[in-house]
Image (cartoon, rainbow, N blue to C red; front, top):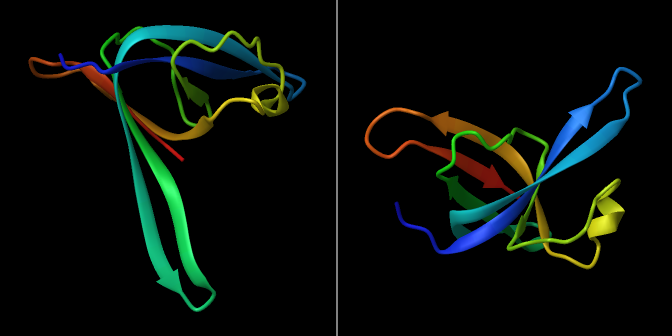
Length: 110
């Protein structure tokens, strides 16, 4: 189990009225890698960061459209504007790899 960081996940919970609430979960050990991708288009160069995180605690609630911040984030978020002072990523996929000798959750975010 290789870890190099900690992170805070804001797990989105949608209620019956369609409003979001956010459950904050601190993950003390994870593997964090941010990759910068770029491509050349007719309008110039486009760049963006893609985040890959492996979480070794399989009980952490995480899914698509959640938000992740590197390290401990003290904010109790009600909207994304609450995180404007922090670099955050929106989770695009969360795969629960619970097989083999190293079970983990693989998170991809942009």
